[in-house]
Length: 163
Image 1 (tube, helix red, strand yellow):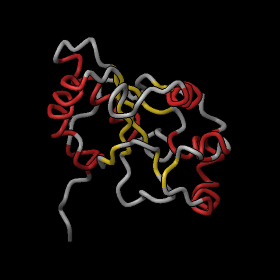
Image 2 (cartoon, helix red, strand yellow; image 1 turned 90 degrees about the horizontal axis):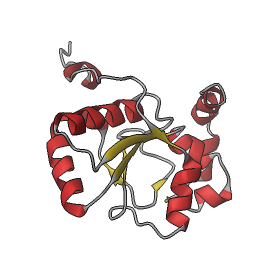
Image 3 (cartoon, helix red, strand yellow; image 1 turned 45 degrees about the vertical axis):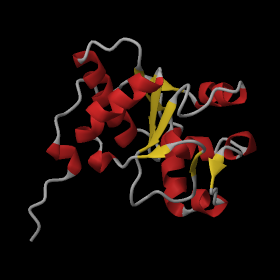
Image 4 (cartoon, helix red, strand yellow; image 1 turned 30 degrees about the vertical axis):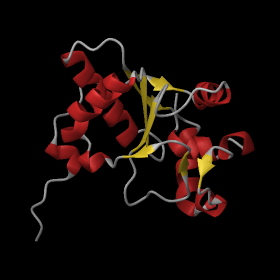
């Protein structure tokens, strides 16, 4: 019998369950205007075992299970690089995406950091993948079938009810 604590219980709850979000339209406009991921903003993919179907171009894969202890290092990297926005995503960004954005936002406030913001990608990579060709053009290793599978369709129904 395993006594391992689930990752979401191993670390403190964030101060807010609903951190700021960024829309896919805004992120796409940044990319199309020539803003560079890793330079002008940072996109973090929080998926680990469900890291399938592709990933947003220029994103860094940092599974949420190992994120919390790395927040100080991530802050140092972002500050040194002059990154002003960190964008977190998972499949729908309702669980891991929101939690990561809130954790990093809490950490930034504790450090009195006002030049970096932490946001979740609204509707996550699933919303991005289902939004059409102009979005999927920016998914590296894109596998269309992965987003049409039954799990993706279950999540898709949830997306329309999100405000």
